[in-house]
Length: 426
Image 1 (cartoon, helix red, strand yellow):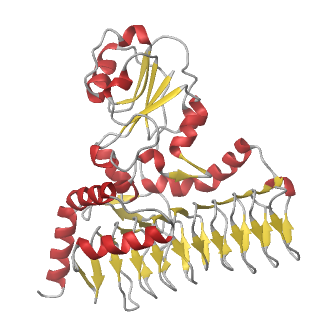
Image 2 (image 1 turned 90 degrees about the vertical axis):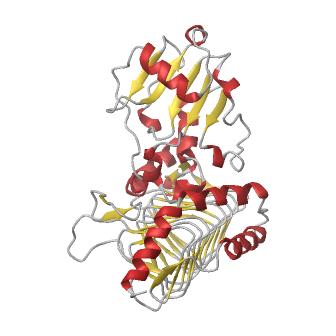
Image 3 (image 1 turned 120 degrees about the vertical axis):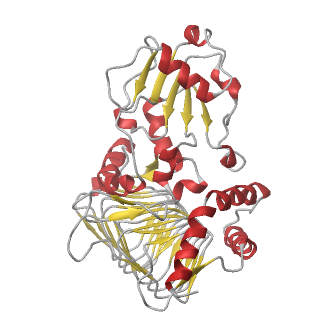
């Protein structure tokens, strides 16, 4: 069976901005792994192909066919929207063709056997989904989905525990190094330290309320405290961090200060003191010293977030911090309000005041004003430098993708700049 992952350019994609601006939805993290990895583990397909927005195709080359119409023939297919929660997906490697629809009648998943597929000459993924919707029997099972980016934040603690149990690994690898004195609270069966990881002296691993998974090559410096459930990604470093419960920290991060129930995609730095709570941070982000976000309103009411610069959306939770897109940089002392949206490729220079709750991509926030700054070129130059420091080249494909993101976010940026200019009387 061939798994076809789909992330189409529909209005629902905006619900996962700013993180989905620069990656397919299945690359987003929740727990120890990405949404895509969870689907692979659930389905265990013989082959994989995918369809994603064309502007992402030049950068996201996972080693299987991308936007290739030929992948829609020659095998039994399982087509799955990346928003589907893997744990809810039933066993679909056998049986007749059928389709799973959402409440609006849109296709979330479809099993299409080769014989039925032969009746349809697929010329696009959209045409195949329309044909499946019109011709295949609908399944009775309803498939739960991830609907907003903050769903991943709120589900992260429970997902970490579930993923640790699924991984089925515990103990300290023979090629890991744990220096004394150190302290382990809770059961050692709820702790895994991977190959080449280093735990310095004076580190506390507190698995009393959840498991801790420290991946290959990670390094934990003295006076760090890690509370489970928690995942520390490959080659990431904790620098005297207060790592509270519910964190997923991706690969190659540098983390200090206090972090709670947050997801950091990878290759980002929060090196210094400051609080990050109930947040989702992208890649190549640098949070300056004392950068802090609020994740709880003073009146304890539910948090609302603006994803498009206009409409406030209820999160249904009293605790949601910040959403921060890739390649964004904050100055020292940056203060982010509860439920703040900060786009990608954005530069924040602050003066100790709370920032607006919506700052668009490719914008500068300087002297209480949102502007276009000096344009894309210096942002790209900084991105190139940051990536090369981690031996990741900035390519023409990267630049083409970010040029597309610039156009996608143009209207919300122009509107935010206009509102900012009006506010200061210009």
